[in-house]
Image: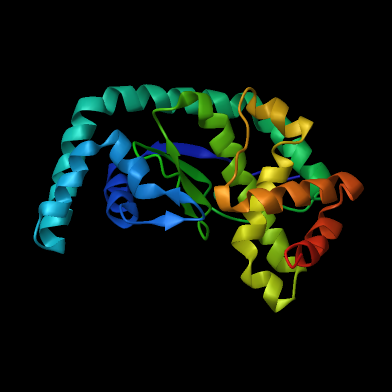
Length: 231
Ligand SMILES: [Zn+2]
């Protein structure tokens, strides 16, 4: 089996972009702007600035300063995140193989970018994502979550032709994670963490957890989703 080689990098420019893009985003019960401001309260100043150009300029300057101040800490966390992944990757790929019946991993860059924003943004096409740097206890959770997304979404679009179901791919992928990462094999990997999922998916996730227990078969589980979601 060919497994992706996951890399981790520091990327200041990406933090600037994410901050700008997510300051006003709310999704499925999570307020990304609030998460950003919790770490970077100074960014609330952009609301007082006149136009887009000034706001972006302020953000860029702010992160240049922030990275100057915390660059060493980030470099240190980069080493930690690499170690954490090394410790779990073999077992992770093994459990994933079992669930996906040795389905091959999709091609991609597989880069986790250390980020000072608690957004954990995913770049689906290239298989890249951001890892919030200031919570090392959650590194494993974040890596497992995003890696599982990459294989699940690829598998899903290859197998599922139903248009209605395909439109809901993101919700299904999130619910899948909430169900699967809380099974013993994955819980062991992210210990002592827990996959909470998005607040708005909680009822659905509880129902789909029961469905998983019945068959533990991914194809059956996806089929059940279309029935359960209508209930
Ligand atoms: Zn996700």
